[in-house]
Image (cartoon, rainbow, N blue to C red; front, side):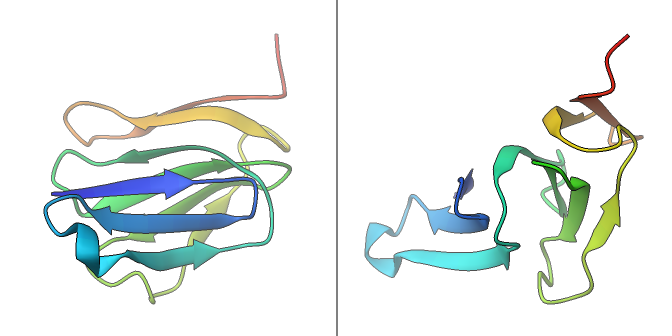
Length: 97
């Protein structure tokens, strides 16, 4: 089973909890603060809310492919999640009411 961690160093790491000796694989590094990550229910996509950079979408089957950035809130995204049926993404950002 794969799990993902994100931190203030800009990295998103993939861990295999069934093989703790494997260590981690760095799948993303943007030298900024990652606020939140979520994985799609089919395990194909990871979305991350970033500090001052909006959202990044990564294809987990080949994380070396081009990352897709978009900025619907004009900056920091505090929370982001896939909808349960993978039909979209919801996010909370700095733009406020």
